[in-house]
Length: 150
Picture 1: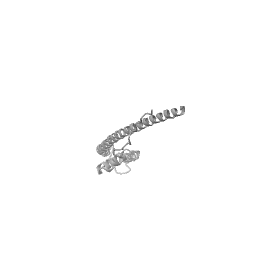
Picture 2: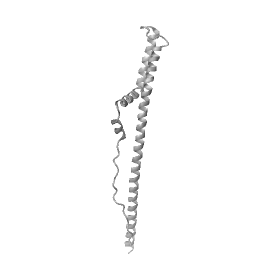
Picture 3: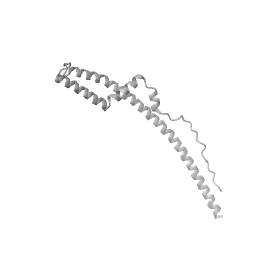
């Protein structure tokens, strides 16, 4: 007597397609967000550090050696003022960029979670289907063995 094997029905993909969070995030950036990202990218580069170091070195050398008019004699109060202003504006701009990147990371993590949930469901369906196939093959093997004995 043969065993009745129940096969799972066809799997319907009833979830929305996976989206590229990076593309969506880039499309929603405001002018200010784009500017803060560009400033963070520029200020956080070796090129900026090297150029600024050369500029500050030239500033100090020109004011110490007196090759030109001393517009900022030692201890370089004007240079300190400019550097303080630069730091006062750069720090909040960098924080804006970092906050936006943290928000993007949270969205990516949530998107990864959703993709993992979808994957788990689909893997379960595949495993159920494979179990049904194993049962069918076992039944076919049993039938073939019985036929061979007869």
